[in-house]
Length: 74
Image 1 (cartoon, rainbow, N blue to C red):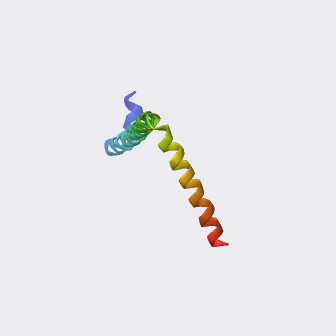
Image 2: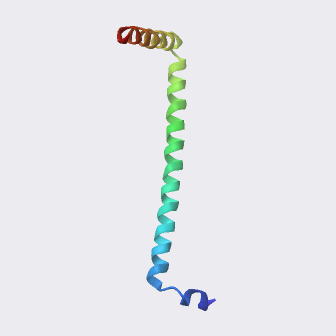
Image 3: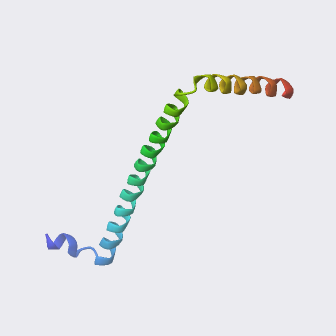
């Protein structure tokens, strides 16, 4: 088993470990951000569920704005 590691310098092994650890940390952080984003979206949906009239009014305002903006560009 020591022959396996004898072929590589110790510094190179350390660099490989650091690179692997860095990739694992990046992946872990991406998962954490995704989970936090999902939780924030669920919280927002829960808060908006208390005011369904505002959601409908906002949707209508946004869709009407899009129609007028498209007509003005023509």
